[in-house]
Amino acid sequence: MDVRKQLQHQVACTRRSLFDQGYLDDQFIQLEHLQDEANPNFVEEVVRLFYSDSVRLIQNIEQAMINKPNVDFGKLDAFMHQFKGSSSR
Image 1 (cartoon, rainbow, N blue to C red):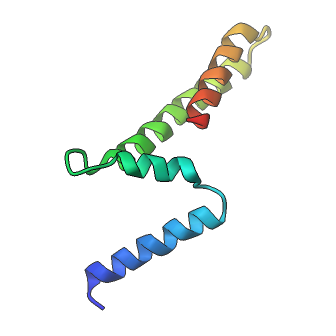
Image 2: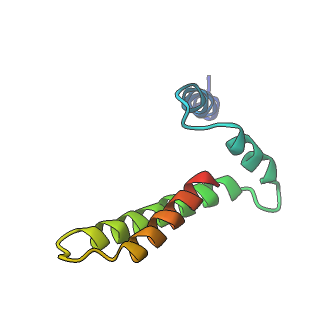
């Protein structure tokens, strides 16, 4: 088996494992269907954007809660709402 086929097999096994563990679902398949020759890295870009947004939102949530004598629950709710929204998409 050449290197390219080995990598393809490894990617397929990892993908299957992520589905089996529940990390990926039908929404991921729908996302894959949106990828085409005009935008071959669409799924990668969406996942990368999700992770960078998640890091930013979690940091914002942490900053809103840590070392604050008076937590701004309105601001905290807004960050949580954004995080929930991006997670459900």
